[in-house]
Amino acid sequence: MQAELVPAIREHRKGATQAALPGYAELMRASRFPADLRTAAFAGVITQALAARRGTLIRGMTERSFQALMRSCFPGYRLQNGWLPRPDGPAADEFDDLLDLLLDHRTHACEATTWLSCAIASAAMHDNHLWQDMGLPSRSLLSQLLRDNYPTLAARNTGDMKWKKFFYRQLCERAGVMICKSPNCAECCDYELCFSPESPATRRIDVRGS
Image (cartoon, rainbow, N blue to C red):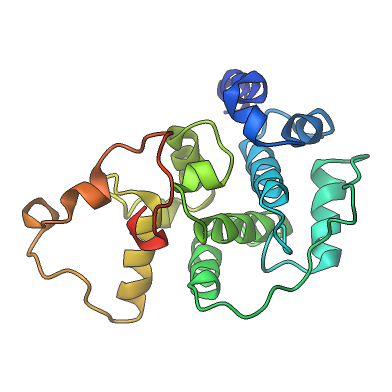
């Protein structure tokens, strides 16, 4: 698997997306696992948060667990300007519910998949398509990341629904909330919102719609 990831991640490191992610190249140069997709996801989420000057780089993590992630994946790298995970104020979003969903479906209950679940849930609370908010080079690599680490959950997305939309639907089903009046997706007036292609130019997409 790693051999297949190397070209795409290398291209991402030198491509146009890098310009929008200050610090991404430095993180990946310091990476212990430069061909690992999870490492690329961590680097993308962290640098997206730095660029947006968010108080918390990855939600759901204590400073101790965040520093453990940095030591494990990016040894020798030091964040500048005191950027450490700090508590944000309470938010009326689905972060906790989505984190629980991901943790329930991870392949291995270990520290690394806990970090990854926090990173995915953090990115999912923002405005663009999930692969963009995670700083990944393509939606296909996001799909691979989810299949590799949350196979039972990813397998439910049989129609290749947009991932944020899919997550929101899964949360509604867990809560017993009916969100669709149409008998099937093909007859739904919102079909394009759930299944249309995800363009790199997309901006300001609601969490429930992307």
